[in-house]
Amino acid sequence: MGDEADHSAAFLPAEVRARLYDQAFGHTRIGAWECEVETERLTWTSGVYDIFGFPMGNPLRRASIVDLYIDESRRNMELARAEVIRSGSAVSLDTEIRTWRGEKRWMRLSINAIEEAGRTIRIFGAKQDVTSEQEALEALRRQAETDSLTGLANRHVFQARYTDVVRDTLNYGFASALALVDLDRFKELNDKFGHEAGDACLREIAMRLRRAFRDAGLVARLGGDEFALILHAPTTPARIAQVLQKTIAMLCRPFFWNGLRLEVGASIGVALISRPHRRRIAELFAEADMALYAAKTAGRNKVHLFSDADGNYSVKPGAAA
Image 1 (tube, rainbow, N blue to C red):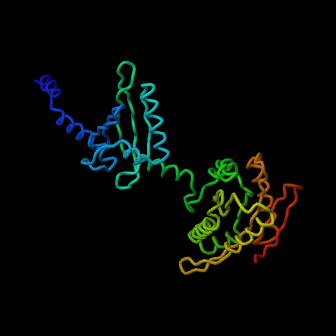
Image 2 (cartoon, rainbow, N blue to C red; image 1 turned 180 degrees about the horizontal axis):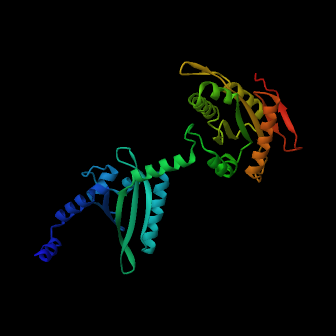
Image 3 (cartoon, rainbow, N blue to C red; image 1 turned 90 degrees about the vertical axis):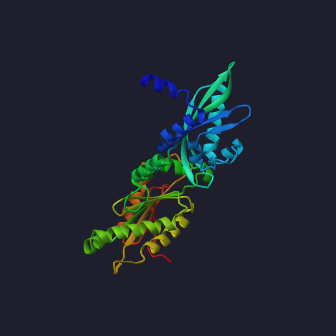
C-alpha cells in the first residue's frame, strides 16, 4: 500500500504538485523559475513572487524584472546567464535586488540549461532569499574591521587598506599625509573620573574626527588614545599643518558628560606621502611616530611634520588661530 501511495503521487495534477512544492519550500524563502531563451517567457513559482515582492497578477516581463537587480548584480547576472546559454554549464551566484516595493534584498540565484540538438532552448533554476545570511556576514565583517568602542576602522583594517587608499585611481591617488593623533592629558582624565568617562571621551574624539575628515581617505583608532588619518587634501606641507592646527583646536574643546566638564588636548605627528606611492606603510608609521614624539616633547597641542627631504622635523607652532 505504501508503494502504491508513493507511486500515485507522481500523477497528481500540476497545480497540486506546485502547491505541495510551495508548502515544502516556503519556509526557506526559495522558489523555482524557468525562462524560454528565444521568447524570454518567464515562469515563476509563488516563492519567487514572494522574494521579489511582485504581485502575482502582474505580467512577467523579463525587461521589467531585470531592472529590479542592483547595477553590479545585474551585470553579473547577465554575464552568468549568457555563459550558461553558451556553454550549458550550470552556475550559482548571489545577487542584490530591489523588490517591487523598493526593499533591498539578497538572493541566491542558480541557473541551469536545457538543450536540444546542441542548443540551449530553456534555462531554469532556483532563487532563494539569503538576506539574513548576508546581513549576518556583514555584521561579522563590521565587527572584525571596526573598533567596538568608537565605530572607527581598527589598526588592522587601517594598515590593510592603506595601499587601496593611496592608489585610489578614482581620486587619482591624491593621498598627501599620514597623521597620528595622540591625546594629551587623557590618563589624568581617566584616573580622575574613571574609565567610563575615558570611554566617553574617546567616543567624542572619534565623532569629531569623523565629522571633520569625512572626505579623508581613512580615519581609524589604532588603540588606547591614539588615532590615525590618511589625508587626501590638502597637499602642501604648510596647508596640511594649518588644517591640523585647526583640528587640534577642535579636539581641545571641552564637552560635558554626566554633568562633568571634560577636556583633553591633542598632539599630532605627520608623515608626508610622496608620489608615486611606492613607500611601505611601516616607513610612514615610523616617521609619523617620530614626529609625534617630537610634538609630545615640545609640549601639548602641537603639530609636527616629518620632512622626508632631509630627515629633519618641520615644527609648526602649537597655538591655532
